Structure formats: C-alpha cells, structure tokens
View 1: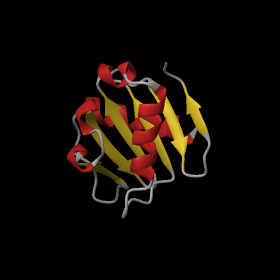
View 2: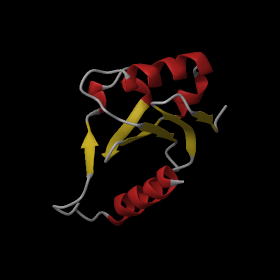
View 3: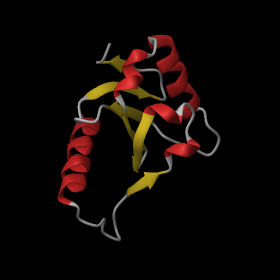
View 4: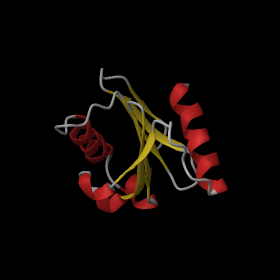
Length: 108
C-alpha cells in the first residue's frame, strides 16, 4: 500500500513539474546504472523503495527474464532497496518485489 501511495505522489510531482524540496527523500537514479536498462525509461528512489518506469517492451520479456533483472537490481552492491516497484508509462504497477522474497506480479 505504501508503494502505491508513494508512486501516486511521485506521478503527481512529476506531472506538476515542481522541483523537489531540499528535505525530500526522493531522488532520481540514472537508469544506465541498472541491469537491462534498455527497457527502462526512468528510475527514482524514495527512502528504501526504487520506482522504475519501463517501456512497453518490458512486458514482451518472459517472466523469468523480468524476475532475473529485478533480482540483479536487489543484489547490486551498494543498493539497499527493500522494495522495487515496476510501473508502465501510464503509472500502472506491473510488478512489485521486496527484498524478503514477497513478489506480487500484476502485469503479464
């Protein structure tokens, strides 16, 4: 639920074009630092959650390939994300996975 609320706040901020405040825990991540980044449009961190907006081609990949990419991101040295939320360009959540193994696949 927290991930959904945070995603909505992210999208509202993005659409309004406002600059982020100094005290925010939201920051942009360079997608070039992520595995399989050719499928990614943008990435943002909010505290310990990583939100990745992907192109439509993300869903053309097999479930196994998508899960492997998410696993690589979670295990990437220096990244300490608890949750990764994958969204399409319309803001719909496609996949949501936590470090402790809970996986909720909403896209096919």
